[in-house]
Image (cartoon, rainbow, N blue to C red):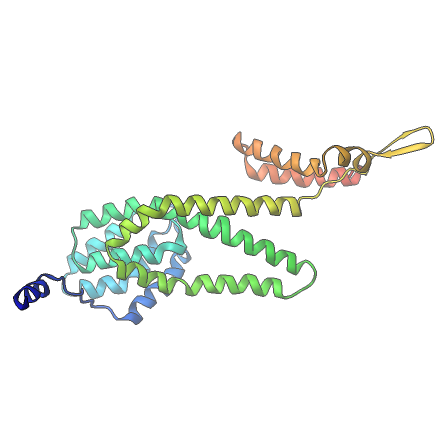
Length: 276
């Protein structure tokens, strides 16, 4: 039994020894916040992405200038994904660089994960968290309450610091993170999209207001076209129809800038002639 236990101990994989401290991994998360500070329309996030990881590559390849040149060149290629999730991917790829995994494998994995990361990150942060917080903050702020902008800033601050645990997550999971991302990407993205669409629908109903001021007269009686006709048939039918008109035009590839301009012009015109 003792010999079997001894053999099991020998066969049990030892914990991977890192050349980076916890503070350095935390700083990787902090540095990832500045990825978009150096934006390029040719390479998108690549300059900031490379800058964020450069000190770590310099430590890994301190005695290998060619290796450092290679990793910098590979990472200066076109990169575009969801910045809030970059720390996970940076931590994962840093583990692989530290273990001197085949460069083609690292490069292939990086390119393969950009798409899923973008889908998950955008669905969670830009289509769910920020619309919800923005709607709540705007509702509070429109009544003159300073808590509105404070709440919005606090959430942004939370997202800023949340990159630290994400960097540790990616680095500690290592290559196991690949399976975690692939197994849960569809579920996370689908659930976040549903929640985001629900919130956007609620915001549309709350903030898009259209009401006709026209009245129809017949003899001594006057009928309000909005209150006594449209609201009786379908309350809020005008904002509902207008939103779906804009949605239909967007599906027809109409430029959103033109839709914004037309909306402004129609609002001013209808108000000027006294129809709304």
